[in-house]
Image (cartoon, rainbow, N blue to C red):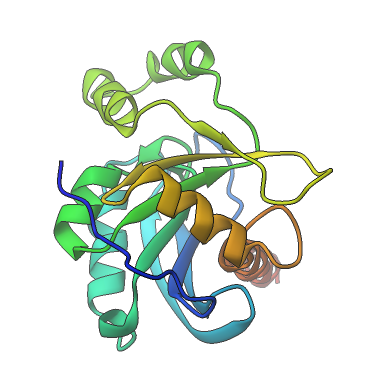
Length: 202
């Protein structure tokens, strides 16, 4: 497997953090996915947005298109995802995302995924073998301690060495044990979901 080589990982490395908003599980529809561009864990440079289908199969393509179409694309060095499952079980193929964008990918979760539970949940969805294969290819999550004394996070990677991924999540975890690009992407995506829910009740 080819890896992006980082001779030096700068404190202001440009990262796009990607997360989705809240949604009603198993209900047909679309969910906003937000990308925020950060320099390291301190400076917010931009925001981008797309929509993906709940329990669909379009997350990889939609996120790749969102990033490739951004005016920030040429400055980006890393894609950081909030896990690999979006909008229910719309699963991102991190290796395909790397191939499409030529940007290394780090998927971050607070908790270590329970693969037995995930596999059982996939039984209720179409193309379950394809979804499971994407999850399997992402590899076993690796524990990383971003802040001493705080809970660890877990990462899966594509297109970069594990030691470089660990340095990048530590550099960008400035306000909590979660990298700042993901923390802010979550705030924005969740706020959008609440706004649309409120508008729909008027």
